[in-house]
Image 1 (cartoon, rainbow, N blue to C red):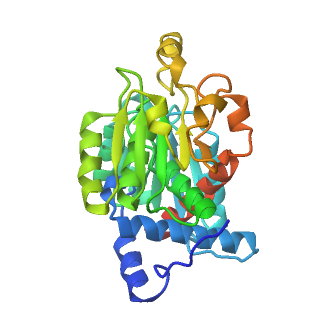
Image 2: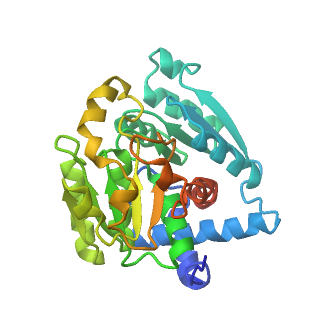
Length: 326
């Protein structure tokens, strides 16, 4: 992997970007400039280098992150908890079932109380409006660990991984095949902000949110990105540098599993479909994956797959976000 040296971590530009991030919320990629997002990716790569070389770096010593979980988690919980420890701080697991918010306490009250105890909040929940309300009523940074609409931390790790493997982001083509869900939304906005081109192929009725697509295209017009939404997976994957998919029924949509299996039957990422991507394409998946459904075993376990590099980078990308905001 060859990653170009960035000037964003040194000099006046770095100082200005660092200052602009302190105390901010991290709810959606749309809230950040391309320069701020690239700064965070470069910071993630630097923090990864320090961790791999055994350097101690404790900018969050004495600080505590409250982690609210209303959805099950493997990567989000472990990476945030380990990330806070490696940064010198402490992470506190807060189950939605154990908090008073699970018994009807207003989100605004919870936000105001937690703001007096903690230095930051990460929340993984269903409705995006819950995260917005939490942030609106908090006096500390709030980080979106996942909602039904957005998954920004995952996408920061995704594009960090792509940069590490490809040496650049600008001009790469991402093909997303499958459900137009929270992953599609955040990948689209990230692509538009960072100068990648992106094609999304979904069956009828499962397209990404039209307002988010329109917002993404508006951003893309200023960065040179090309955004394309279609029905045909082959059309989307043609000459792709990165091929991405997600489960057909995300958390909260399990009851639609049988219906979605029929709708997505022609959208499996397999050896036949990936023949139309570039010969050196990379396969990505946010995990957990259902082998034999949205992706074949041969692809996810094959030589093009970087899903575990991607999963590891959740730790480093989120450490960058935590360090910058808190």
